[in-house]
Amino acid sequence: SKYMIIDGNRVEFDDEKNILTLVRKAGIDLPTFCYYSDLSIYGACRMCVVEDEWGGILASCSTPPRDKMIVKTNTPKLHQHRKMILELLLAAHCRDCTVCEKNGKCRLQELAHRFGLKDIRFKNTSEEAPLDTSSKAIVREPSKCILCGDCVRMCNEIQNVGAIDFAHRGAKMVVTPAFGRDLADTNCVNCGQCAAVCPTGAIIVKSNLKDVWKALYDDSKRVVVQVAPAVRVALGEEFGLSAGENVMGKIVAALRRLGFDEIYDTSVSADLTVMEESKEFVKKLESGDTTYPLFTSCCPAWVSYAQTKHPELTKYVSSCKSPMEMFGTVIKEHFKSRDIMDNKTTISVAVMPCTAKKAEAAREEFTRNDIPDVDYVITTTELVKMIKEIGIQFNELESEATDMPFSLYSGAGVIFGVTGGVTEAVIRRVVEDKSQQVLKEIEFLGVRGLEGVKVCELPMGELTLKIGIVSGLGNAEKLIKKIESGEEYFDFVEVMACPGGCISGAGQPFSHQPEKLDRAKGIYKADKVSQIKRSEENPLMMALYDGMLKHRTHELLHVEYRS
Ligand code: HC0
Ligand code: SF4
Image 1: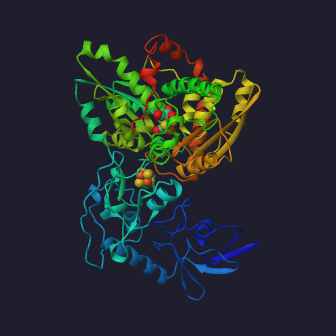
Image 2: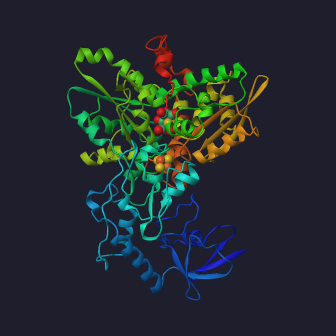
Image 3: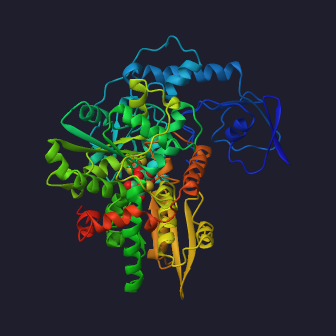
């Protein structure tokens, strides 16, 4: 087999694309800004340089390995080279680390520390550029940009949105929306994936913590919170626990200590979504309309994408509100009369793995009488900040349960948090055979796994239904092209904007593939241990349909998007 000699050690390879991968295989964590394995190679930051046997300097991320090649990762020349890059970057960068959102998580700060940089030989040329706070989900601070291009590649290549790009040349080069527009005036879908890969504070998730603290400290407010399925398998990572460990019980305990009055699990309303979406699916099948599939509607970044890029298929996107919005509505209805009795106002908060949920909550379709059904959305990492700020010892907390009367949910509701979960939950609902064995068979139809495109077939009576599952909007685009060209037909298509589904949301702690896989395992484990497996077996569903939702499902659980 082929091999390279890296720092005197033999490293074998076959189809690895670049030297950097092999260097990492050899146990060396080369410093880089612009390399994430899912994105195409760019080679701009030049921190990952190696020296070949003739003293040549190569960017290891963009150089393919050659058989018997000899390189070193640690030489005086390379050391000087890297230090120089860092100093130049820092010379043009703001250094107010203490008040930066990215403090402690910034790659530039980390590398400056790793290289022991004390004084910068160059004059500080950083200029203050105005912040772009126009978006509901993210904030851009262009003066902190180091032009690594990761956000641009994420937005263009993985998400196929193209809301931001490089503009100008040479020293004037910047990353910006086209024509210098505000982000809110572009086709940005608020997926936040640009912020997730940004190594500095140049693109960050917009915080709603101030609003939430204010509500919590206000006695006239009843503060109700719901927690999304994917949060429970990632939040622990910020407290040193392993990815995939289900910390829902501790999250509930922490939320109580923070002062939330009522605590619920979004998996409950995911069950509601399954009930409604299944009805819609069966109706669609009966209608005989086979132009487009029924598309899922719970991912707000996907809904925005469909609206801006494919208005022709918006009428095939399910009319179901997302579980978060369904719960938002149910919560406001539930406390309506009690609020009058108690002379309080209910404020509804959602803890989500997602940044697009911030924009979803603000959509006018989700306000009734000018009051939003979900008042504030905070991300997993924002909740971590709250917990750390007041000093709750998270790992010491004993598990607590969510509040009545919305405390029952099925495993089908929990698996929403990973790509393929919504589909699996809907299949469990629509198949007639409710045996253990069929439940197991569904699992092996091809709905599970983190691949960006999955296709499966579901036998149903005389028919065989064709189902597509995609995550990452670029993958959605590929599938839509195939549908529109007539190359493939689907009955049902699930789309999640983030690669892997909500577990990889931009509001989660930063993750690479291994953490994502562990989070997915954690989600399926939660399903495995749940007593109720199918949404329709959740007794709360019957109670809701006989009570609050009687004659009002359409009004309360469905939405017609305007623009
Ligand atoms: Fe998801 Fe959801 S599964 S979008 O990824 O459908 O954010 O976790 O809460 O609403 O339930 C996110 C996660 C949710 C919603 C649910 C759906
Ligand atoms: Fe592009 Fe998503 Fe960032 Fe918007 S939030 S600029 S769509 S990557």
